[in-house]
Length: 210
Image (tube, rainbow, N blue to C red; front, side):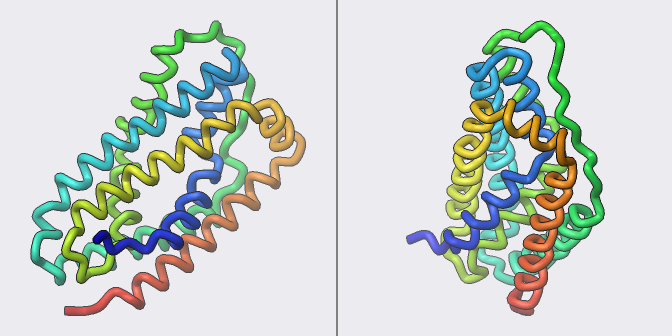
């Protein structure tokens, strides 16, 4: 039986996923330049790239999570500090992302998927984020840490597609709204930052010392 804090995980994941960033901008610009199908395939590629990071994180953490509650506690504490850092950076960030309609010739569906995947696979920040984020929802005493980590990674990838896939259908509306009122992006970033800081503080306090 997997020991996973599903409700906090899903709620926090959704908030992080909807925060405008590189992936969301890529999906929207592909949609605006080539249509809804191109945007959906780009979103599918983005989600597939997350699966690669899930596998890498599970393999890399194997030595830490097998029979060592102390090392897992240290990892969770470091992850909590990293979430605090991300939260503060989001709050401090201004409207750093702009949604600009691409005038380039649309790429093929295959290339749209590949580019979406590579945008995440080649981003080392995602690996660091996974290392910090996913273990926070697994109890230190869990007897199936690796399996739980793998399932959470898959769940995060699926949630990403379920959120960013429909973005292709709303690309024109969202881009127009943000261009007219850039403060929307700032408010979203600030809200997400506060949630990450709260989660980081809670996890730092809850992390048992061994």
